[in-house]
Length: 299
Image (cartoon, rainbow, N blue to C red; front, side, top):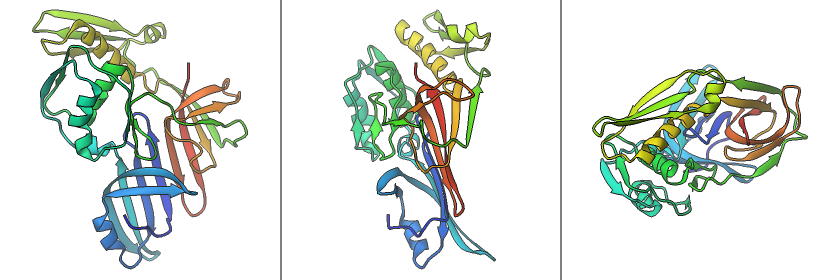
């Protein structure tokens, strides 16, 4: 994509759970409409460092008394896997190389950091599943990791963290401590109706906190018992992703990214320690800018 005009504002989000996203606005200059029409990907840099690589979804041109502006929005490179549907299939003892060859590489994803992993037994792919769901399910069952893209657009399948940043001397505009209990599963009942078997997976931490929220999941006939347990554990893990979150607002541009580890000092709202950046959202306009970090305490 060609170079863009000076930005009027930006909103860039990186997440370890959801698809990254961006929205940029800038003044309209000669030839801009043609450039935007041809654009399919976006690469953003800040102070010489890549801070975002993603897919262009939409652009909008508008004009009023204050001038003519353009707005460009899109998502991270996970969009390629989210937007493409996988064919129904059934694999036995698949390895990571097979999953990459059939469900990742064909969709413009070539930069991948991964280690050996495999799923034991049957690994089904249901009709209507996205390529991202296939990859996410495989990584969870085969290696216990969550796939994510880093800020440079590289797919990370190793569970590796990003950089380590000490925020001890950083100014904090606001801190919030969020403790969510609604929607956190206390039990998941996994049923294999054709085989006439079932199992209940419990979430001891949620039960101890008084949560009572059960889900029922039906699985295909040939799902092994271990896979049934993994299915329940996966549902619980997804439900408690944002169970306990620390949110920091910093008057800085891109101080940390999703996947990084930040070190926090003690604060009036709680003790410090090591935190995983689950989401970073950097916004700026002509007057000011800030980054909001959503943090999960490392055990």
